[in-house]
Length: 198
Image 1: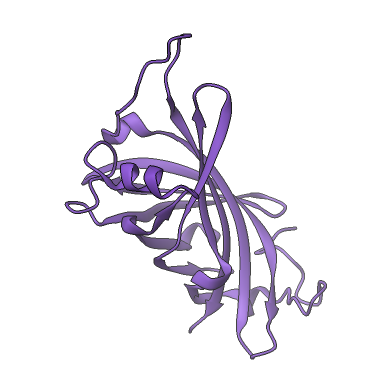
Image 2 (image 1 turned 90 degrees about the vertical axis):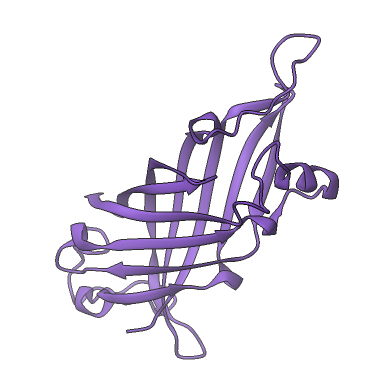
């Protein structure tokens, strides 16, 4: 029945709780157990994967009315990594993210929806290079559990697709065989663990 629709007496593996009242509250995203990743097509033939290593964020879950749930995220653009220092330096430069001028990318939710089962959708404003555009993220609830240190955790996996050109990130290079070096479409992937704080 989903995170906000489970029966109160239902439990899941790994100590997960299904008490919807217990899930309601404020959460802090745990950077050490969270991945914020992206995938871009390179040279029309392969994918380059990357992630951000430094960020902070909060969630508010409303067990009675999921539409009142919210999310906020701040990402340090200097922390971008793709496994190639040269490529990372290019991404931080004026050709792409201009990290000296725009050090932070932000997401602020504006709408939350329960889609049924463990599936949810959150819409919000993503701000890159000072430009804010709406983004919709599909989420799957992975469960809730108390870890060995007594922290109450929730987990979500999410995905979205954006066009970087919508935020003015347009640098590219033409290929001799046709096409371009870097795709406009970027896939975003999220694996989120958050700790209840109140």
